[in-house]
Image 1 (cartoon, rainbow, N blue to C red):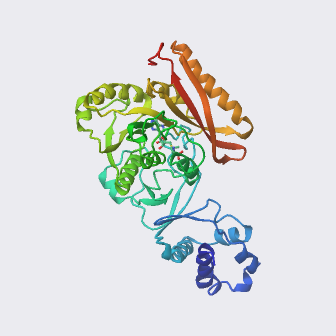
Image 2 (image 1 turned 30 degrees about the horizontal axis):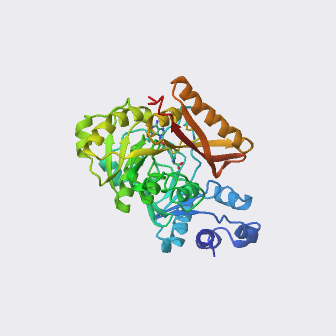
Length: 401
Ligand SMILES: C[S@@+](CC[C@H](N)C(=O)[O-])C[C@H]1O[C@@H](n2cnc3c(N)ncnc32)[C@H](O)[C@@H]1O
């Protein structure tokens, strides 16, 4: 039997059917059992139930709404128990990630504010906008999953989103899926993947960062606003065996300390440098670091800039041009939610906008959309797409600044 159905069924038998209400008093008993929800996700040790698990179908919804709090706790316990073999100790109700929060401002950190803990100790429930300290990190529930042939990702489900649907985009970066130019010798014009670096302007817990690292790039420079995601990324790096350095930024997105000190601490073993803060000064920060690392012989040309913000990554398109290597150029990976009927039109729009940036700065560039990956359906009629924008600078007119 499906373990979710089994957990509910066992609860009904032990606490409902055998006590107050007899089996015959529950109308359509067989229909009720047949229609019990079956879908779930496990991110060990958490069982995530879909948002409609207690509201559909009708007979089950009616029965659930008649349960008092203590009966509901018994139900959640019974569900957790039927998943114990899979290592489940906690249960929560999932919710879609809201782009806006309850006070009408943008949920910039994409915090899963709608997730409802049902069973197990999730630690103190903190305001997602507050700044967590080490104790908060220690007390929180952390979950993990292994994807794409062994990459571990860790996150605190109350404070950080996780999207399973991005697995195909990760596979593409790993060279296990659809076309992805710029990570093999032929599309890098003879350069080895271990000699290039990548920037992820919306690093999260390392969703795409880890795929680039596993593919063998020398280093990833990441930006991430959410302290919980930065900590998840740090923990994930430890588990995967990659050295990671976290660099705090101030509220304006500037480095808190000096550049020389920071650069002196970087060694070739640091595979990811994650800036904790806003990416608005990313190009300027990298522009300051580059000559210092070049002096140490430790700079690797930035050939990819990942921009994984939905519904649109437009705020960083211009930044990506300022970051890509001026000699060799590279690829800007533009994530967008697009009307399924306008996917090609969007590609032309993005290319035009990149060309306009060049025109404004009097820099000649060759811009082309190499490929469009349809990652997943985001909502009915809306597709999460990644546009691979190939950029080459004309050496007569660069640098683009
Ligand atoms: C949608 S999530 C990224 C998830 C991942 N790329 C994916 O598609 O699954 C966007 C991330 O960007 C971060 N973020 C949003 N605006 C940012 C900014 N201006 N600077 C740095 N990070 C930002 C959020 O905290 C969040 O973790």
